[in-house]
Image 1: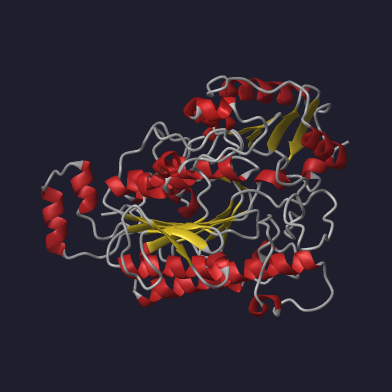
Image 2: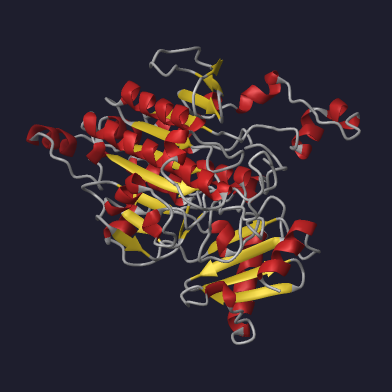
Length: 492
């Protein structure tokens, strides 16, 4: 019986289980109570953009707020990178993605030898589904992978965009990374193993063009997956493509945000509202099937909002390199930075009947914890190679300590470590900061001159962590052009 969900079973069942010694996997498969696991992963949604965060009055997210009221809201929930590809590699592998070379968007796809949450849960007997944005296959920007796997094209590139052949790309698809069901895509074109009516398609997926609004399509696909598999343990990874640019929303959602405001903000609010409706539909579907108390839901963003420093309200037709309308208040910085605005994100865990209702959890947690928690919930042995922690004992109060002695980051020419209330941040070879994140001044006051011994100790520990990565070491070189702009704007 799952140790976190002591649901009633017949006494004869208890007797049988107590006298039989079963192998771990058989024991896990024998348990009808193992919870379903849903991970909702948003795209470029800033820390401020849930009304339950209490930062902005213009946001409307009643269903996600209710999710938090029915569960636990993390005030210090982190992602592993301030950018899309590495953060997705981290949450799906449960490992710091620098361990296998996915440091940034233009490095590697998720290596085939890395084991995903879906593969681990599929082995444990779960049906696994992926909906929405994948972004872990090779792309024209994956220069290291292209040089190794397409040497002729690499040698003749001459500045041209290199096309990745389908035969090479599809080996990285969700369907071969542990997902039995997949509805993979971002706007209207999807590679799917089932249709929105619930009918099976080709097991490897078929390309389909869906009519309608991209976020409604992704919610439809998630609900359809649950309808297809509600009678067995399932894992659903729903990766919404919002509020990432291009900003687009229907009148149904835009009408909820009248009045004078930047149009980019209005569209971001509308897109977040569409995801909020989707969360409501998912929870209603779980309730209708009578499995809402046997389903744990994680809600996390993949990184902070890209503010582009000035949050300029450019025309919506300007789709790239612009503010997406989301906010990181009151945090400093944005997507692309290892300041809090880049890596501290909305983070909620709800499991009605098992986790406390309306609890605020203030100790640092990270997206890596999803895999470790899921493995424990599936009654599987702990995997020592994972970097996360099973959160359930901490969220229920069984364990009153902190889930992590320290959290680590390395991105571009930046690195950081958090231990307790302190965070040490290094940008390039000359910018070093020590912040007290329990203070109201948080990253607006550099304490490195006040506590040089703390900074030195944390710097040493950060270097020790980085020495075990695929590309070892802490970056000490010059910041790139974008980083120079960021640190000049927010810190200097």
